[in-house]
Image (cartoon, rainbow, N blue to C red; front, side):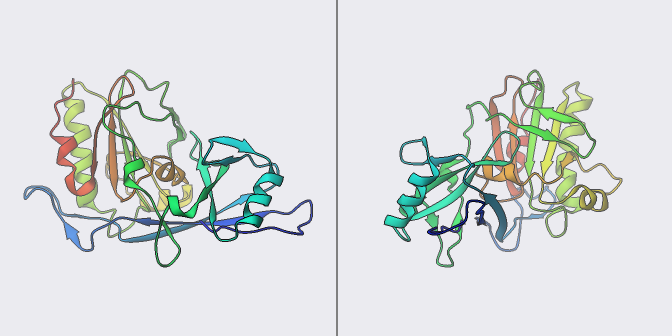
Length: 258
């Protein structure tokens, strides 16, 4: 995120924040099991811009409480270069508020980008934070309404090579289809930076194993996903049952679901 200091700005002032996420990755092609298709992890960073104004809720990370714009402005003015402002993503995957946080509490790289802290990711055995996603099929997927079903959340950057390939989707579709044949239905969703039109162009007619969710990369931020592709399996009660990067998908696919 790019911190900034405001002084004499007009009443309709808007600040644009540049969010840079560096995703932990391994360079090259990896495979966890000899019999699994070989897939790749993303190695790089993603930059997005978000806009806030004086009416946007601002949270002081140290207290967890909302502060006024005047207090926020004073904090940055008196402490130049010590704080960063970053978006907080809601259950819709949108930046509905922002938080101001000391740089010393962030994993900041030499180029100024901020890495997601893997220690802040959800954990197995915990309830999944609520989400409401709209799939490419036009349907709404609400985590609260999906209780009673298994859910597989797949976190991607974009549906394009070298990540999105026949090999990378085959392990997913095989897992979904195999369980369906046993009478276990799994709602499978995939987040992406791609727009709806880009998804329609990128997703082939073959079964990719999930419903794409256009313009949904905010969920990668919401769940602190530090590498992609990455997967979270949620049980019928909304509890996280398993988590794994694509290269270790067998941690999920080998589970016996009932």
